[in-house]
Image 1 (cartoon, rainbow, N blue to C red):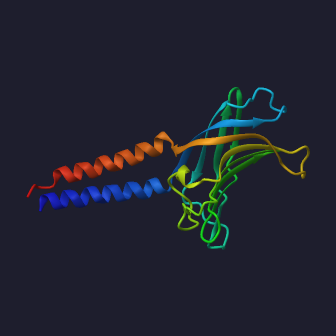
Image 2: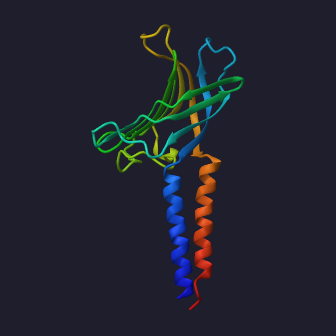
Image 3: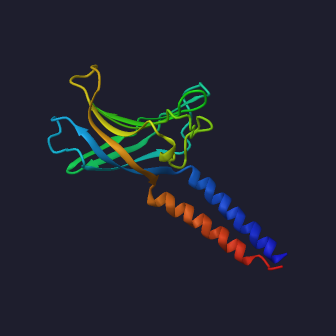
Length: 200
């Protein structure tokens, strides 16, 4: 009976922790390799490493009623560093397309005449998403065969079209260390529960 009480206590702690974690910001880190760069960024060259991350609020509601398309206008940040060039923008949106169309995951942030976008596009019908919900773990890169790209867009003047100036192929998309620590602590707690169970 004592082990059952201990188990119930640990489960309640895990549930409370999960609920608290669910309401906290989530960060995905990514790396990419520059494929092309326009002269407007003279210090950026093909082959340069891009390191960045996007942070968003996990409880952000879907603002699009279309059941196959989720649009999440979330506070947070979208940061990227390419050599000595750095961007740090407020996170504007996350878009998730699923069901009946090639799946897509897109993160975008704009500041002035500069727009950052990270886009994963599936044209091979692997359907990485079962719904248009906001992913709380990074989408698997191997499910997106058509495009895995980070881009920097500029426009000549307010109101004009954005034009791509840097394109980089995304090579990793993973939870940031804080997210990994949360997952690890959960697994550790489950392991502790399992070890406390009496052997048959």
